[in-house]
Length: 262
Image (cartoon, rainbow, N blue to C red):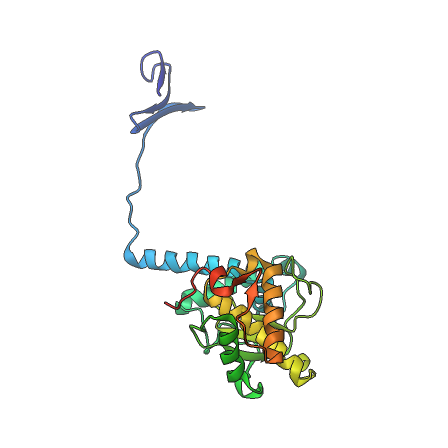
């Protein structure tokens, strides 16, 4: 509401009138300014970019800390940063991720969801019985893989930092991606395992991917997710595919948001 003290401009006029004119005063005297509203000019291309930007932010936030770490690792491969940069490395990792997302409008680069330029090797042919593990896990969980899951070897996957993870503080042996389309394995660690432990590790990570593909929120239930993956990994390694796996009396199709494939 406008408050007028005396005739307009003779003494003081303060406030806004009809959301069109605002009055005030300063050391130079009284003034009046017209309020101009900017016209909404966002076009379809801008809406498209904004949608991808928001989606990218949401995806990065939804990643496990271990997956986010790979984007931090990719930064160190591009350039040596000083200590002041290191303190903001997490933010810069997100920027690197968004740069690739908004450049390609995709969440995969060079055929994988991992950072381009970061050393990795497709390991499908290096993992004995990989296709059989995929099939066995579908039988055990009563879920289907909606998308192919590609396994990759990495030289280093960092330290587990996810709150609630039973292995927090230990070296990461394997991890699954946010969309459930790939798994990463520490190559040296994997190759040092027995055949039984190799199967258990791969089936563990595949359990995460099949649940992610069906809308499971890993970050909201870390301990439960790891227990389910451990138990499914063990049963696949033991060849115990029936009866269908139950967690607290429920089959996985009852726990995930989308038990079917789109």
